[in-house]
Picture 1 (tube, one colour):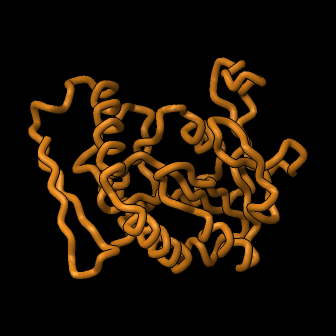
Picture 2 (tube, rainbow, N blue to C red; picture 1 turned 30 degrees about the vertical axis):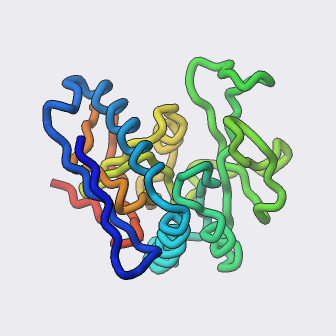
Amino acid sequence: MILRKKRTADDNKEQMTIKIRKEEIPGTVIEAKRWWRREIRRQIRETSEDYRRDAARRITEAVTSMDEYRQAETIFAYYSYRREVNTAELIDRMLADGKRVCLPLCTDLGEDGKRVTDAPEMEAREIQGTAELIPGAYGIPEPGPETAVVKPEEVDMIILPCVTCDRECRRLGQGGGYYDKFLDSVRADCAKIAVCYETALADKLPVEEHDMPVDAVVTEERIYRWRPE
């Protein structure tokens, strides 16, 4: 893989172009997904904090300008961790706009942090503000166990994290399966929106039979919409 970084006149705006030789990508879908996760994570580590901060601000503005956002009453978001697209400002904006906001609480982990169920279990829990969050699974801030459960069918819009997406709205997550399982339980008209750095977009992600595209991918540059074939 050949990685080149470009800087524009705006110091907060940086771009990366990746030239990938086809023979670098493993043959099976599972192996290819692992490869994309590894390469994109390495790529994001090369971006600056200024770029990520500016990208998160612009993504917040883009998401809150969407018709899906204006129409949604209940929104299931995520609290960002490490170099994920930062959602702190977006969550504050949702609360200020009077949205009913919920965040994930993993319920499948024991006190040692290890999974105690055969499949990933995650609930949507309503919050009133980010100050009430506590350290949770994998060190990610999450709602406390006393917070109210929000049923999947009550959710109008989901803001999804990712490692990467492509321009055809395929999403590649961390690999835990939490969001994939949760998405199986929401209404068909629930808006599924992934947020991603433009620099982290893949050309075309490998998919398995159960992988479904999201409705839109929002980057700091534009909104990519899924269009059924």
